[in-house]
Image (spheres, rainbow, N blue to C red):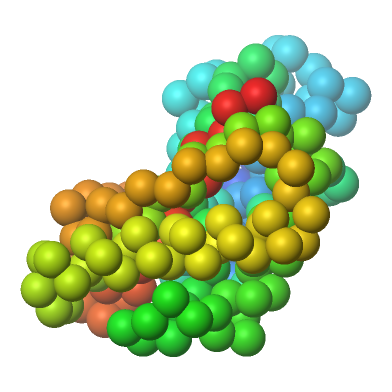
Amino acid sequence: MLSDVGGPWQILDALGDIDRERKNYERAATYYQQALEDAANEELTPEWMAPDKAYILRLDRLASEMRLAAIKPVKLAMRGACKFSYRGVSIRKKATPVRYVFGTAEFTPEGLQSAKDLFECLKSAKADAITLIGHTDPIGSAEANLKLSLARAEALANYLVGAGYKGTWTTIGKGEEEPFKPDDPGAYDEAMLHQLDRRVEVDVEK
């Protein structure tokens, strides 16, 4: 029963945990993101029922991880406009699930869909300035990966500008220097760990 769990966002969080265990990453990402947004909604979730800062950061981290692991793109926002602050907890940086053709800076069809979602997110959040930080997996030379990570960040920046993003932007390439740190590394095989590494992070300054 609902009263046994404590509230709507707690149920969504629990469902996310169940689907994460089942490796249904797309649905887990959806549940964690919905839990985060419902927990931040003061009409749905009174203060006494709200998660603390550490738990808000956990929900965001797990939603991001599941988006990166999912086969199909999962939106950055489920309940309307994108937010980078939840109950006063600022979350400036988001790992996007924008995918690229292996070894290139060319979007896959799913990557293009995620890039479109990121543009809508930045537009709804009225983000005035962003930094796009490219990351790669450790396959290949460190020098090649550094160049590739920057090229991917620049490809995303060019897409966003072409789509109509009006803010200022900066691109950074980190190569393989900062691998993704999953909540439970033992839950993934090497191929999935590499998929989590391949990402572009968006650091939003408002």
